[in-house]
Amino acid sequence: MQTYPNQLFVDGSFRPSASGKTTPLINPATEQVFVEVAAAEVRDVDAAVESAQRAWEGGWRDLAPGKREALLHAVARKLREHQEELAQLEMLHIGKPIADARDEAGLGARVFEYYAGAVTKFGGQTLPVARGGLDFTWRQPMGVVAAIVPWNFPLAIGCWKAAPALAAGNCVILKPASLSPLTALKLGQLAYEAGLPPGVLQVLPGSGSVIGDALVTHPRIRKVSFTGSTQIGRRIMELASRDLKRVSLELGGKSPNIVFADADWQRAADSSPMGVFANTGQDCCARSRVFVERGIFEAFVERFVAVTRKLVVGDPTKAETQLGPMVSEGQRAGVEEFLEDARRQGSRFAWGGGRPHDRGFYLEPTVLLDVGKDHRCWTEEIFGPVVAITPFDDEMAMIREVNASPYGLSGSVWTNNLSRAIRVSRAVESGVLSVNSHSSVHVEAPFGGFKQSGLGRDLGMAAMEGYTELKNVYIAEI
Ligand code: NAD
Image 1 (tube, rainbow, N blue to C red):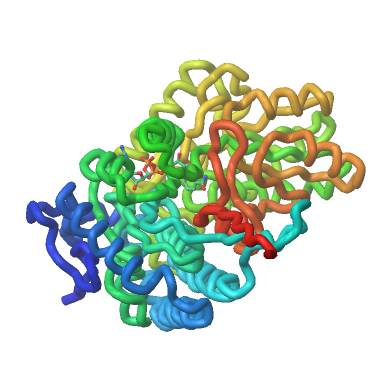
Image 2 (image 1 turned 135 degrees about the horizontal axis):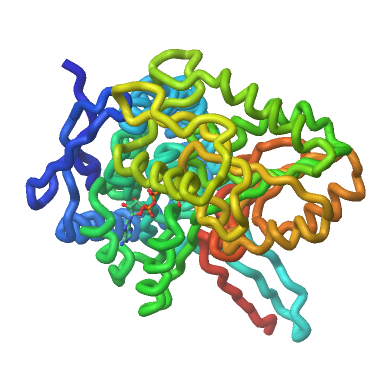
């Protein structure tokens, strides 16, 4: 019988939750419960924080950078050795197609490799202060960091947060979403086996409504690094303000995909469906609003729909599958409400809208036209496989419409005109933008949002900065 990492990972070992409570996990492709996972409660948070603080003061804080670097490389090696197992776990609990799940596990390892290298390259400055002497800055770790992550890329985002926080010398308590704890728990176990001392990386699966406030308000937790919805992000920021706790927030999006007539628009049309439907549209960077210059609008839509019709939606265990099921029945029901609203308001369904399979939480990739600019399918994050395509005539008016969104996470611009590429990239209010590509995530580059898409940055050296306090030391010359 298959066994799963299904208990809390605290102080270097698996244990049940203090209450003994568990949560069932449902495979979204089969709708079957396949494992029960321990659900942490407030006492477990206290135990984890105590262990983390002990580990931090007991050596992790002051470990020589070379040793920390070697340990993080060892974690990366473990992740690579267990890449297939991690991919299978990821697929099972969230329905991610296996090919994507393998990529995600590989990305997790790459993130640890990058931050292992960063340990010995990231530091302070010396400053020529006016009064002479020696002035230098120190980048110091904060202490215990809580990393709260969503269910759509549980392993990758867990690594985005854990690796730089650890590299900077903090201890981490990772809280995965209730729907997707398995890969996070495996990460905790593998990191410990790689040599991280007990308490340095712990994993607390459980409901945000039960342990979220305890993590955010715990006086020993110095920073909360959160990825999830804007609604919960707002609550975390409010709670964290009580003791001015550091927060970084990676939140929702409603990203534009802008296609000019001078672009290689055929290439744009061929790649844009997966620019929104990848991960079954459950992607904060999904290009869910497509703006197409009017002269090519009809041809673009025709080609976009032709590509969408051929997408393979089905069994995530198969290598050729491009879209798996949605993560849960509730998530699909929420998206179907959006579609019902769109029908009522007279939007055209150029493709999709139905359920392609009887079993599993599947939903067809759906292409909407004639969506009103005040309709919620246009203004709100749907977080499912739904796109709205609209024509535009005037560049400035289109950019005003793009920037009217409260979100500002990601986006694409397709053009072969260099001046336009520069002008539009500057004007779009988003933290991440790609020209002639849909690629948003590079381990080496900062990732995060403008406006209500977030605060702070994951990835790159910017993430390391976010997990340190900056101290200035002045030494007088006497
Ligand atoms: P969510 O906000 O419901 O949950 C995210 C995490 O927060 C989960 O671990 C959840 O258990 C926890 N949580 C819930 N209530 C909490 C509380 N009161 N206090 C503390 N933690 C709490 O989001 P989700 O449904 O898991 O994920 C989807 C959302 O995440 C979308 O809005 C998506 O855009 C966003 N997202 C953003 C990024 C990014 O990098 N910007 C990446 C992926 C997902």
